[in-house]
Image (tube, rainbow, N blue to C red; front, top):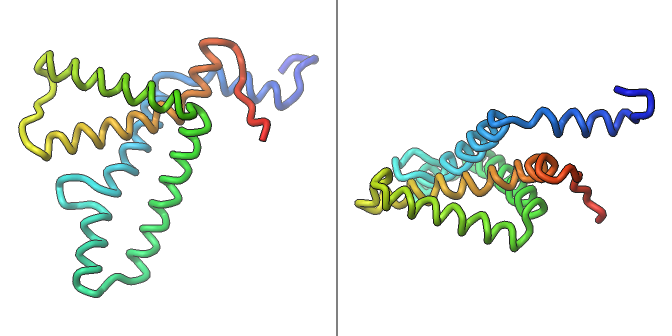
Length: 152
């Protein structure tokens, strides 16, 4: 910290310079964990577990608690993504991810045979969109040198 720099400025500048590719990977893994814990085609997800419990009239405090934990995670990620990207940014990121998926399919790197494959692609794409939203402020700072500040 320099003599002219306040503690808040030091923290902001340090945090902005510490964002790396690995920082993005961690955000992506967190987003992917939340998405796949909520639903995935394997049958081992909160959706399947809670549905089975509801069908057997055994939905209880444990299912409710984990549902609330997942809901809190979703709210945190969606609010962070929406605030960072806003409507236009979310649309542009989604279109870019869709274009990337199309390119990977055209190159033969992604297989879309079957509904399960398409679900996996959609789930990973959603996690990627959320991780872009979580990372965007850091990317913006690196690209422009400007901090994003909520003025609400």
